[in-house]
Image (cartoon, rainbow, N blue to C red; front, side):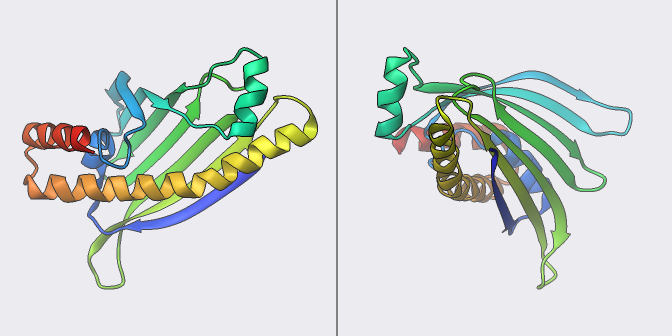
Length: 196
């Protein structure tokens, strides 16, 4: 049975800053589990929307009860590959994204879909509203084990999204401090990630 996690969040930055930070969000001190990010494909369509496909490699943590079961199946899940696809429409100030693991999908398939929309806050300042839905589906073991895996993923997602939101905020603040100087920003971010 599929479990879901939904989140709504408002980033107090304008859409242009957010859309640049979206691609520069790794490394940051809240995402030390991210090992690498590689762009696989990028193009602009005839409507002026930027399409991007990236491969993100992350370190993963599993609960002790799960590690014991997986060791008997000879699976070593210490890193996972995530396929991230996104479409950025600068005219409508909208980002559509999907992230899903492409390995260990029998243990747990996790699919995160998100929309990020530029808007005005109650105070008239520009904001970005995030709407995220994450699904968890396990095909590992017997029914109660599958459900336990899905519930664990669902519970962990709140922590993960909180760190992700803090990381994006951190990156946007640093980007604003650098005045949009991307190269200087990337060097500063890399140095910060090494310190943490």
